[in-house]
Image 1 (cartoon, rainbow, N blue to C red):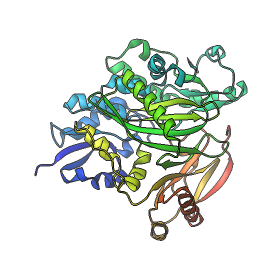
Image 2 (cartoon, one colour; image 1 turned 180 degrees about the horizontal axis):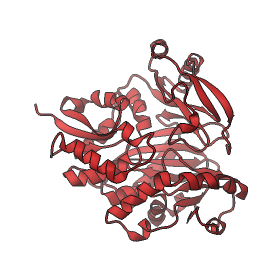
Image 3 (cartoon, rainbow, N blue to C red; image 1 turned 60 degrees about the vertical axis):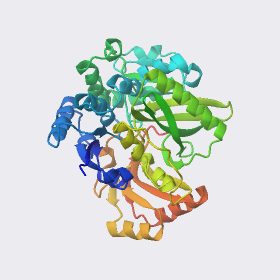
Image 4 (cartoon, helix red, strand yellow; image 1 turned 135 degrees about the vertical axis):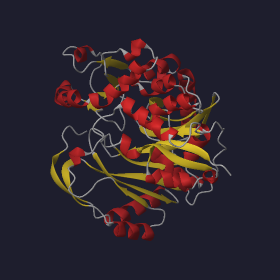
Length: 433
């Protein structure tokens, strides 16, 4: 049987293994349109260079690929529609993807259909001496680039001195993402009023409460949601500490989020694409607030779906990329509940020790369902880690499964007792919140 050629933008070993466990792997062969190392940990994003490299990678195998997909954020998701159009495979339009990813443009679209579910928002130019003074919001509020990933350069402004404190870093680092993102508006026929904006940052009023992510897809205009994942933050901090699936939020609240997501996705015009939408639920005011829309599956949730459903939601991504409507996910996994823990530090430091492969194997053998990914190496200065949020460093990831939340936490604590991850602290992170 001739296998279908599926090209992944940002293929890595962890996700390749999950892809190869899918039922579709029997008739699909997976190729890297770009490797993970092409899109993460790089000094700069040469967008045209990445487009050319991915095109050459595809053509080295076939002139008629069957599917092109991605599970990582920028620039992977942005390259999918470009390559899909070039090779004639199913996929979303570039404009609809950018309407999701350009935070200001996305808010303008959302404002048309869900005005009560979004915060106040204003764009400003961090290189202007006056722009920020005219933002009509009283602290506290958030500032963030119009394009970012993993909360890169996103800061909570509790008073105006906070802005003065982070401004030098914003000016020094913002072009890392904003310039290559803006290149897409220059190179492709997209609205000039958006692409030509001098404002590269946004200020938004606070959303608060419990956080979760709605996972879904659009197939030929039909918007389907198949899972809701809780996002748990460290106490009194903005950084995530874990994801849990399935969500523990009330069903009525989940249904409201699904309705809001469906209206926003439809207005934006996203089609033939997976998506995930991040929400807040403020229980005190019974308010559902939409944080952002991502035109991809959440790679961070794949192990959760595999543990609970017996199959990762890479399967949804793959079916959509092949032009097929995904079947309903059934609960055939080994666990009733699953979690993705982020091992973080809120201090600057130097990595002195990481667990050996043998130590990791011993932990995972002792604690069933545990998977460990270490993001750092001995001797690494944490300040050199790319794509971190503004308040912490993510040192490792621990996945596990269990009967309930209590078992998830118990397994995680046992794992952390033996992880042997040593960091020599060299000072506080800085503007932590």
